[in-house]
Image (cartoon, rainbow, N blue to C red; front, side, top):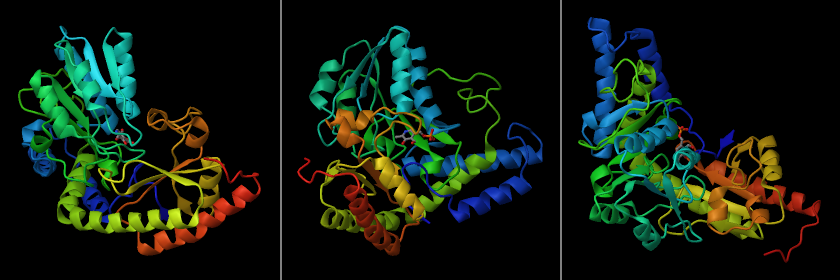
Length: 385
Ligand SMILES: Cc1ncc(COP(=O)(O)O)c(C=O)c1O
């Protein structure tokens, strides 16, 4: 299998699997219990919290574990609005993940004024539009660090300087940047930051929200007072321990991994552009997470290419739909100005830790051939632009 959909999810690192298996066998205790098996479980959760906090340049009391990146995004945004009932404006970008866009939509229905700041053709946010949207009524700016479809890295540090002029809180969704580029809460100047375990070779169903000390926020989930009363519910202990192990491994090898993955992605990019006519690349050349490649293969439905690749055991995703069951064209591709017929031709290829040079060479043999054959039977117009 050649798995090139690492932005959707990453394979569980075998070391993470081993640690979780050991934990599940040896530590069933509830971390809230005061007797030894509870305390042991709590200690291991604390260890994971410390590893994750250190990786972000935070302190451990600033990390709240959640059930997903989606939950962390919801918690950050709704939690801040609940804590600031006197404020009724939200600023976000037009290319956020649905976890942010849909939460913004929910608040909009409740009367919050939401500004979706536009982006340029490479997906970079318009900072002057962001600045002019800012008002004393703005409770929060939420702008993603790196985009999941085209890899654009936003200037969060600059956005932070703008936010600080008015003392506005800043949240960033770092689900797609964490582990791929440096993510440090002080360097970015954020108050809230979302990460998710399954994008960094950890398990699904566990995320975290960094909340800078002193930030006013209300919980999303009430109950047994876990996670400093900010996220009740008995902890997903094995998931958290796995998340910690995944982040410990990032500390050990993400720098070398990312250099290697960057080279593989560059080879794939060069190969695609040399062998497939009318493959239109989207995203910036610089300030992009290098492992994300987004191509519109003009004249073809991306789904047809995806399915043909899958018959060869090669897995990529389309960039055309918000989610699998949606016929809608991606809001990210629309926001960068792509016409719908080109958006429907879009493939997202995302590389990761377990990809090899051989994977890339095989894709470069198979993909151009698939495209050639599909175009042959689809009366492809070579003048399409
Ligand atoms: C940018 C971004 N934010 C949030 C999420 C949601 O994370 P999770 O799958 O843990 O809910 C994703 C996952 O695709 C993502 O890419």
